[in-house]
Figure 1 (cartoon, rainbow, N blue to C red):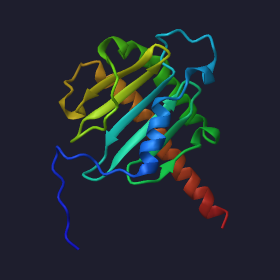
Figure 2: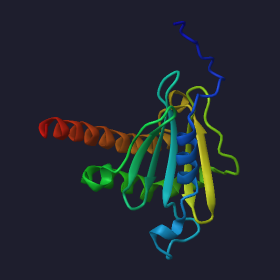
Figure 3: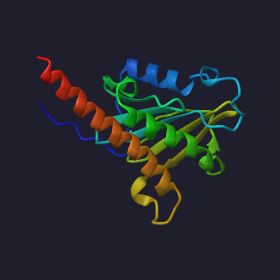
Figure 4: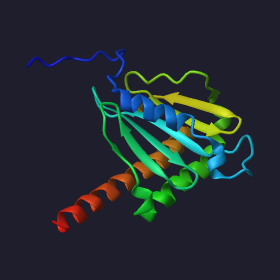
Length: 174
């Protein structure tokens, strides 16, 4: 079987389930988190992170501590917040601090997938969806986007730890 090389400007291949799940995450209503949210309060984030030439991971976090991963070719890791308090803590901290990045974001009306190594961070508010786009390697030291990246990487680390614990528990129950 021939290996197909991917050009940096090519779109990531995706399956129907991924597109539908990502779309639902981007349009998840604020009302699920109470009616007292202000228009500029960030209640959720959808982060598209290229992980390799064929792998695009989307992490979804909400103000209630929920955090899930979805993969472009299918599959997900969800529900960890129900079993692992570290996931809830990291996701809530990320969302509660994400509002400080709204001033640097652009209001989004289109929700295309990234190309190359660019990360897309969509911040969900009652007043609309805001987008930050950048290549992590191109963010200079001292830039406040490094703090944003560190916050969502912490959520990612907690999800990975939770996944390892779930796998160990599953092996132990056999």
